[in-house]
Length: 426
Ligand SMILES: [Zn+2]
Image (cartoon, rainbow, N blue to C red; front, side, top):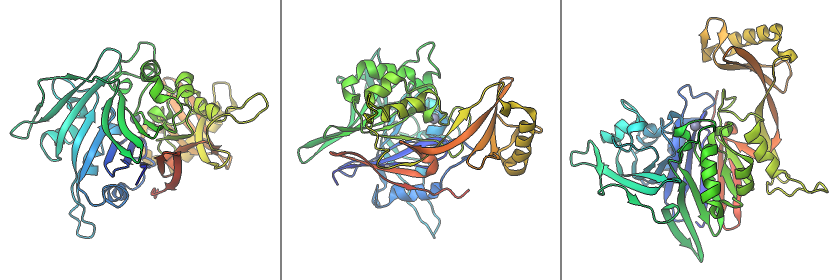
């Protein structure tokens, strides 16, 4: 099989991508979602897919798992993914991980930021799941190095396998590589632990996200976790030649406003774009038609003076649905009280199960069906100022996991969309 296969899961608000390399090795990038799992597909199905013919083909070891950063929506389902099932109707073997890659390791251990109790880190330390090596990677302006950890003799505590951090000589860390015919392919980490820059949106944990590039014969795909403007600034400065004219990009940070600068979008200039978002997702974790989404769309639809499309996106051959939120501001008629009351009524009737922050008041973000058939209307409380969001549905060049798991391939001809596989039942 001379291609990469990517399956971006319909995991709700969160991220998980299964990758099959050209030689059959399997990489899992992130596995988590917010606890309410709003808009998520069937996780049991995802576990079967990973073990099945498209990925592990019955093997019980994942060759590499990359946890981009320690936010729960990127790792809190990793334990579930690896654990098996004793259900006689659907027996499923437990999986081990050969090499785990993380950002944000600390002197207390590579997974100190990945939670205690029942969380992923604690279960690795207590050997509930088997991870053979943990690579704590830093590739930023200040240094390029990795520390490899494994478990001590008692199997309860990661220790340094080396005498400490070792330098990464290249500008990247190569996870895997191989050749297909005369074409070289590789999986490379291009950034990890990039430092948050004052004045940029978001925070250190997100800015530190591992950025991974998959390439074959000069064709390239990019997965970025919740990378921010700070991460992008590093990539534009230090990894320019490796990121020019990508074939597939997963929009960082679920399409929120802390990333996707025009400069970064212009450099990567992709033909295919995918975003991990939950169905009708909320707060910052949805594609609002603001800077990030418009930057990607405008690039893909770019036209010359005569109106001919210059962008590399293939929307014109292959239109598909895309939905996002638009925002209205104070003074708009939608902020009038009657509309709000109507929204509350809808909310209480239809969506009360999502909970409320105080009686009669929606939680920090909520939505209900609009009287306009094609839209939903949402309501958000940010500080003391309420505002409304409208859900727009149209066709665009960006595919979303909200509509189902997104399957792509990457081969020496480029990136190819294969199918959307919906498993959500709610
Ligand atoms: Zn996230």
